[in-house]
Amino acid sequence: MLKAVRGTKDIFQEELGLRQRIEAKACEVFTTYNYQEISTPIIEELDLFQRTLGAHSDIVSKQMFVIKKDKDNLCLRPEATAAVVRAYLENNLDKEGQLYKFYYMGPMFRAERPQKGRLRQFSHIGVEAIGVSGYYQDAEVICLADSLLKNIGIKDFEIKLNSLGCAKDKEKLAELLKKSLKDKLSSLCTDCQNRYKKNVFRILDCKNEICQETVSRLNLANQHLCSDCLDNLNNLKSLLKSLKINYKLVSHLVRGLDYYTGTVFEITHPALGSQDALGAGGRYDHLIKELGGKDTPAIGFALGVERLLLALPGPQVRSKSQQRINGVYIAALGARAIQEGFLLLDILRKRNIISEMDCRDLSLKANLRRADKLNFRFVIMLGDNELQKNVFILKDMLEGTQQDLPQENIVLELEKRLKS
Ligand code: HAM
Image (tube, rainbow, N blue to C red; front, top):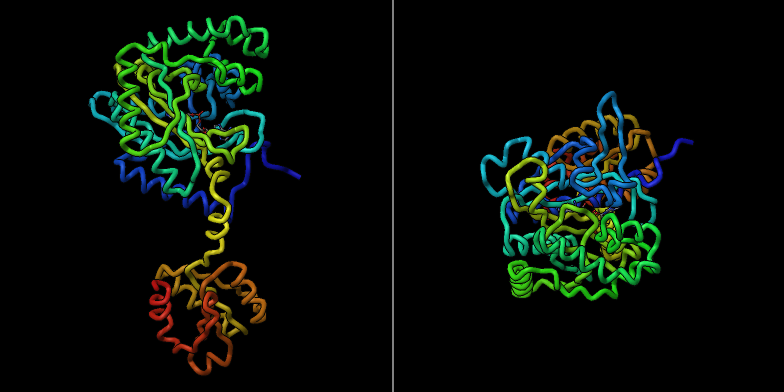
């Protein structure tokens, strides 16, 4: 039998409903913060990510889904930040010198070894604020992530915060890391021994337990930060405190992508196990220039939708699914009733009332079982008897009550009850 590709999944019914609710809530929160939607293509030039994420990042070195087509070297996008910046430059938005605040939702692709919370096709909900530097913008983005997670109903997440500092500070941090890791090299995995020479930052996001333990014992204490960057971090910390946003300063947090400088953050959740990041983000003040634009500061984050689903509290998931569809199922018995019912179905749908009917001449019991399984709040029942009396029986599946109603009143009556 043909199967879905490993690390991808079919999404329907309850999970699809939950995802749609998360996306709707995200749209609401993003709009409140005055972010506008952007949608970029799923395929991009491979070069875009090779130039921006870093040759030694896990994504570029081993996780790209590459598509070779004639002379083109394309790929499935592994993330959206570089793509949004490409779109910003290609559409000349940089010429207008304004602040652009974008949000996006959609599938990303990374050829990873699948496990809980780690897929090869997964979805991001993210934002990119392009054009403003400083700790107020950093605080807005972190506050937005915090507010979104709370609105979705996720509890107990932790925001981990750090600053890589400006480009010079980042170089200093690399030196500092090399110095602190020099005498611990033999205890690191062979990949990390290579990373030490090529890009020492990548040691900090190695998934190997021994490497992680070594890294967690490093005491970097923001020694690499110049006075401006340290002030920025301190101002951000006190602003977050005033906004009552809990965070933890983690001095070895660097993030797995090369484009970051300045503020970086990661949001973790204990329900996720080893892949514990719900989302992450940070500043990428040099990326726009690197891609050919003017020097333009920017910051953003992305949340992984599949991980949000894992972190949602169980009872909430269940109670949502138990909620009845605020609509009506028509149970028609016999050929004439089926025809009348089918015409009524059309009227209801044109009045935007969610409605369904099974035209297979089922028994009443089978019809009611089906209405219950489909989770409808109301059922309209009709057979020869009702047709003769010119009535419909309206059953409320939630209350367990039923009532005969004149046929001509049914739409108005239903509309009234669906609103209550
Ligand atoms: P990232 O940390 O690579 O950042 O991905 C963000 C989130 O996507 C992760 O925290 C995780 O929740 C989810 N995620 C990543 N890989 C997978 C996977 N294989 N399966 C399931 N979920 C996954 C970025 O992509 C940056 N573009 C974020 C950003 C936006 N920085 C600035 N602006």
